[in-house]
Length: 81
Image (cartoon, rainbow, N blue to C red):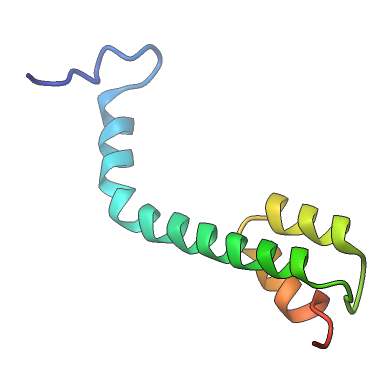
């Protein structure tokens, strides 16, 4: 059974070819983002002291700012253990 992607409304074959060509590069980036986000969220939820902000602020930063949010938390937000 062959999948026909050319019939998708508003998406040309060139765009789909580009998306499939970029998948080997995008998948590791997405995995890194997910791992960073999960580790940062676990850390935020386990700790009560932060250098800047509070727990709610850091949860929002980690979840809403891709890749940079978790890195910002570990550099700027995480308090001393």
